[in-house]
Length: 259
Image (cartoon, rainbow, N blue to C red):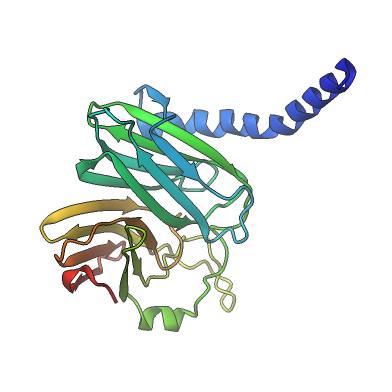
């Protein structure tokens, strides 16, 4: 490749990356202090892997996967994980906490993405340090997209839970039926905005052992779904949730078999 072609290619790549980099500087620069305060945030290489689609098929249900994996010999544990979508009206998707700490853990969920945005995963280790990785996702309109289910159907099934174990993968999945309204969705009949109403807190435990808890916001998709690392022990799994109207939901699945 000639020097002139290399220079042209570099210029083109810089031009294409420019809007994304500018967006990162603008949005994250404004958000950073609100989310992490004045704390230093290190690079998460070797600690967190964030898997996202580069271009989402449906902005209202964008799949995200976070893989936590500390290096062999590293005695630290991850105690918290915060997911952020920079350009969403409420950027913090949710904060997940691991009361007993984790050296390895996979977590998958589905989120709304309102416009082209950096998505961030910020992990806190038990030494008090923060570590961040990010991925750029092309999606738009996820927070204002109409609910997939009819409101009457959503109410009829409100709070129903499903728990499944994928023993061959060492995973389990929890789903809670809830419309998780963002507050930005318009009722197509009344032309009024549907008030925000979403699952704010969720916890999962196996016997007396807490697996994880979450405090979430409007960016979690309709019918919140979480797939996570799981080892069957024969102990029951209990899922508890509370939404922003104060409604609580609780279900125990015997021996972790799921249904």
